[in-house]
Image 1: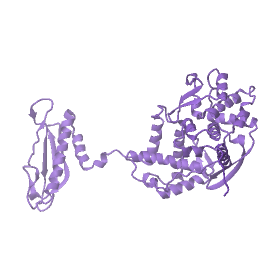
Image 2: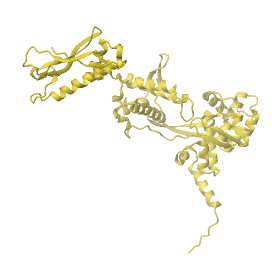
Image 3: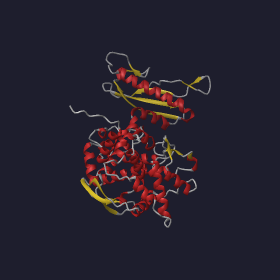
Image 4: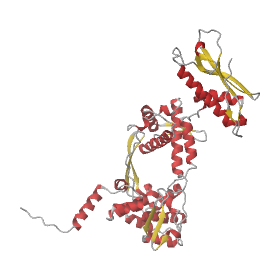
Length: 454
């Protein structure tokens, strides 16, 4: 048995000394069969490792002096095996040099095993559900780079709700779900599941019946799933791309959202609510939304420091963009009423409840139809207008009333934050008749053109 000695520099000094011996050797009982190549790594009494390199050679081709396969024509495989042994030797030397006095027998074994079985030491990729759970947990700690504030609660809630449906869908199908399972077949099954009536288990462990979801709600769930999958793809965890197909779409439908006319806003302003402070505060906040176009999430950001020379300047929470808005006389009246501040903002749910009471007292009882697709079925429901009033109606009323008054779209968009005019025109609520009247008014206000009959 030949010992192949490797000298490894001791980096603590300038002299070279023997730190360990590395040898490659074979043991062959029969010279006509391939023999396995072993490696032995020894350093005094500190460690002595002897293990298979997973390489083989014919005994007659082995050079005991060099610890490699001879350079002869018969050994056609010599380059491949010798290259493997060279790489393994360098790796062992690097391990010993890096570890210094911390070299152990187990470390040497692990180094050799890692070389031949790297997949055992690669970090295990998370499953789809493990990734989503981690993604949501990280999102709760993440801040919006534009605003410096945490990701909004509503977005986190949407993440959680989508994950909830995915888990129940997997349970319903009685199968485990991973990235490879997100195919077009999955898409159709998942959409059908969301459209159907289903039994779900809430956080308390109670089973509850839930009707099919509305089309826009389903579309939001698909959109959120794509957020998860895009993040996993960017991190190199997901390699399956079926979700990028144009058929894997987040369906949407336009719904009939209401707005309040200037006359209806005036009716709300004129209400005497002095005997009901909670409704009065809700009314006053809503008027701010109607005449500034601010989102509900920005109302509690308004302080006396944001108001100067009849203008309100504010950095919006959602977009991070700054807006400058002239104060309408109703806004000025509300701010003066509360000594330069706005009434305290309450939860969105309570606010909407109070606001409906206000709208009902103001007599907003015109009949409004609302069409939507739920459970895969197109439905139309009629409501009295006060039932549909919400915080967002204020912002939509602001944009729609200014557009109807003739203010250019681009000027309004500077306040609402819409990026394109197409998106803005979908947002406002102007009927075809109102568009036609607007065009008629435009023609009437132009210089008179003479029409000559031939």
